[in-house]
Every structure is written in structure tokens, then in C-alpha cells.
View 1 (cartoon, rainbow, N blue to C red):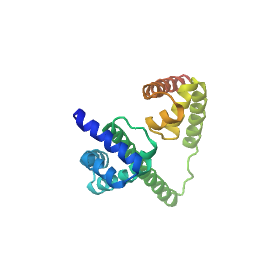
View 2: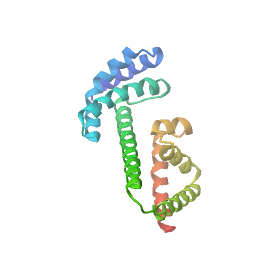
View 3: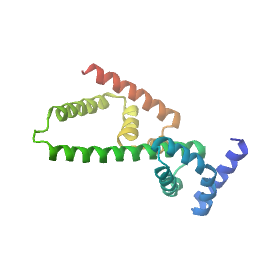
View 4: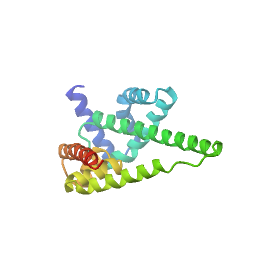
Length: 185
């Protein structure tokens, strides 16, 4: 991408944020719609779901962009697209698991084993304890990013840390959590 494209993206983005005109945003989104579709298709492996994602992501942009400071629209849009697709896949997986579980319970006369639930509960307690042991900055960024599902930019806005610091705190926090969880096993 050339500097002039980046500059004009930034200009169009500023116009949208000043006037909140969907037509202006549509002009900017049109440039990258094929890329959004490509990323969505990689995740969903289904054309209809990918097309739905393209429309849903535009709707997300309408809501999220007015309150965000975006330096590089293309990169930000990629992260937004990836996060959207991952959230959709998680929802689908959760729905699939709950319906499979319901069928298994109805078909099975055996009691459900509580060992898995107990183990999960123990791991969650350990995880919470390990999060509490992190440095305050790491703790804040990890909670926002992983537990509240905020993107880097949202974590940056909420904490006031620069984007590089946010990424560093998240990466170091994640590594420290892994070490802590391994120690407690």
C-alpha cells in the first residue's frame, strides 16, 4: 500500500469521524471489502458466512469507529475482522457443544462425571490466583484483552498505555500466567 493510499484512508476516516456519514465510511470500506471477505473465508470456509461477516463487520465499524483513534485503517480493520471471525467461531462451537451435550444427556442413562467440571473449576481458581500475582499493568491488560475480549486499541484507550506497551504487557502477562499455571500443577 502506498503512502498516498494511507493518507487518503486517514483523510476519509477523519471525514467519517467528524460527520458520521455512512456513505463516507462505505467509500473507505469498499477499498478493503475484498480483503475482509478473504480473511472471513479463511476462517469460515463457507462463502455465505464470509459474506455475512463482511456485512456484520461494516455494521461494527459504524459503531466502533467514531470512538477510536485509528492510525492505520487497513491493519486495524484486519484485527477487527479476525476478532469478529474468532468470536463467531467460538459462538458456533459453544452452540454445537451445548446441543451435543443436551443430546448426550437425553440419550444417556449414566450420570455426568463431575471430575471434568471439578478440574475445570480448579484450573479457573488457579488462573485467577495467577492473574492476581501479575504486575498491575500486566494484570489490567490481560483482564481487558482476554477476559473482556477488548482489542489492543480498546485496551490502549482504557489504560492510557501506548499500543506497544499494551502488546508487551499482554505478551509478558501471558507468558507469566503460563509459568505460574505450570508451577501450580
